Image (cartoon, rainbow, N blue to C red; front, top):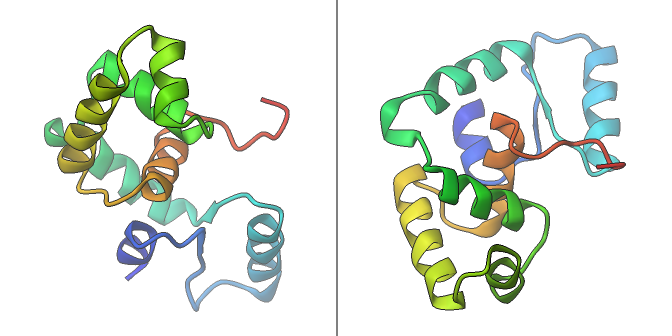
Length: 122
């Protein structure tokens, strides 16, 4: 259930068995714009993200990083010195490869695999 919630855009997943203190930390993180995922779910995600089907090329990783940092397609194109249509083509391939539907889901993915940091100073 937690994996499905994340794929659908949840910013945090807390299992029923966790203490109230853990729930409070998770709520605070999400309220602060961060994500919160239990260590057991993080391990499951890491295992899934390392499957060969989900591996991104270096260029795809650059594009994901740019999108996760809030750049629009035109800005990504300018930043990477490629055309906007090339960015769109890459994004379509990335969405298909990762079975992700939108930029928000892509941002969650980038956070989960460490392409971008949750640290607000970065």
